[in-house]
Amino acid sequence: MLLLTIVMVISTVVFGCDEKVYGADSVRPMPYHAPEVAPVATTIEAPRAPAIQPAAVVDGLATRMQEATEDAAKVGANISVAVLDRISHQLVTNGNTRPIATASVAKLFIADDLLLRQPETGLSADDKAALDSMLRSSDDGAAETFWNQNGRNAIITRVASRYGLANTSPPSNGAWWNTISTTPDLARYYDMLLNGAGGLPPAQAAMIMNNLALSTPNGLDGYPQRFGLPEGLYDEPVAVKQGWMCCIGNNWMHLSTGVVGADRRYIVVIESLQPSDDATARDTITEAVKTIFPGGRI
Image 1 (cartoon, rainbow, N blue to C red):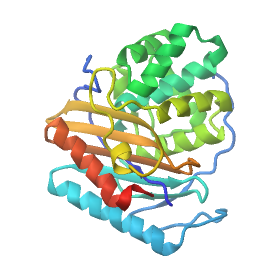
Image 2 (cartoon, one colour; image 1 turned 90 degrees about the horizontal axis):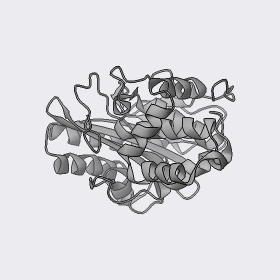
Image 3 (cartoon, rainbow, N blue to C red; image 1 turned 90 degrees about the vertical axis):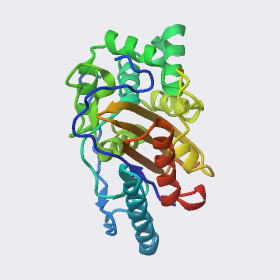
Image 4 (cartoon, helix red, strand yellow; image 1 turned 135 degrees about the horizontal axis):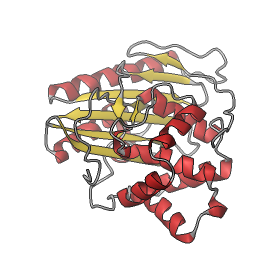
């Protein structure tokens, strides 16, 4: 098994249409050991890894990543891929680690900040329901409410600081869906969320992950959100947060992120930018996942 994180890079976001187109303090993070990065066709094994995958397995993953990247390019898509094994601490990417707009994946940061500042026991019934809807069904209204209540851009600054996300920054226009990150940063976030190194207590982290495991087939606005990891890794349990935006130039952007496997060992992030209709773009990112993980398994 191996964890994949795929991320596509967006240099400039012209307009965000994530899902619906509308347009902690002082917590000291625990020490974090950054994973070793393995670009396409190259592997670097972390020396402290207790169970490194055989080189042939890793090489095969890198080769399939390259194949998926080339196949996507043939239909005009630019994809970014990264895979993190939380046991071996080995990260494999397709070499594309430029900044990307996170779209609704920014809702992870909104939830994380909310739960640190106001633990589950302090949430009203309405806020708890809104949080669940935001994480499971990508509720934009809930995200907007929490965003405005808790400091807007300051939310991203606080979370990036706690998790040491050096390449994650608040949106330049104040719109949460234009929060900027990278695939390695998103993989790091998931890893630290699960191991507690980002400062969020285990009960609150579990609340986020359990909601992601209950991700609904469609967003609250009706947009299909099974593209990428859910449909590509169909024979694995996944806990995912999806993001999508139109109108980045003439491109659709899709971002599929999450934790894979019954033991939540693997983190996979994949992003795709494609000048096509939304259905074609969803198919492209899903096919990339299937190419990287034949048979729907890591």
